[in-house]
Amino acid sequence: MTRPKDLDPSSNPRAFLGSELRHARERAGLSQEALGAPLFVSGTFIGQLEAGTRRMHLEYARHFDDTLGTEDFFTRNCGALAKSKYPDHFAEAAEAEAEATAIREYAPLLIPGLLQTPAYAQAVFSDGRPTATDAEIDELVAARLDRTHLLDDPTKPLFWAVLDEAVLRRKVGGSAVMAEALHHIAGLGRKRRVIVQVLTFAVGGHMAMGGSLKLMFFEDAAPLAYLEGFRTGRLEDDPASVAQYELAYDLLGASALSPRESLALIESVAEDYAHEEHQP
Image (tube, one colour):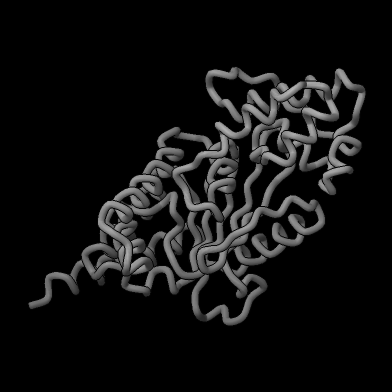
């Protein structure tokens, strides 16, 4: 059973709400499984709510208030925490990402958000939302760049990315943008802040050809997997399913170039883009 630690409410309101849920549940003498059963959610999910790695939705909050005798405490407070600067399909994943101690991400088409430069992010959103206003694009870019500050800490979270070779070859934003973006990734790798591998085209078929995959690990909660498609995404917390995604990621890493070889390839492609930009 998940046993989350007490957290400072001023530092993380969602974690504070989760801590209050744990105290109320234990006071009522209920297990995580018993509290979650009427909502058709697992005890693992309740543990993730208590650890602050999952968002508390309104229907859950109402059930907790009714079951735990907390009047309208959870209903009142979860509404304020529901607001997010991220798209609806990604908001909960972004919140979980911020609490993770380790993140492993397979990127089949685009540079992962945590590794993007401002120019690359601008190009991604401008190309992907051709009818959006400049203000809307700027807001999306700002939210994405805000996520990159997770890597400002020199050690946490541990970030390990496997990039499909298509990520390097797809010229998002033009040669100059790609040169800068790939040099940025290589720089983080050379500083040993991130681990990056490249899955080359030569590998052929593999277990994760269906789309991107992000695995998030936490100190006091079970791991989560995030699967993303075209403007859609979902978090997966079923332990058996997450174990399968972990296996897929491990196989991708085993098939990819080593981190050293990968950095050399990334830097080589970046130089190719830089030379291309300066061609008359």
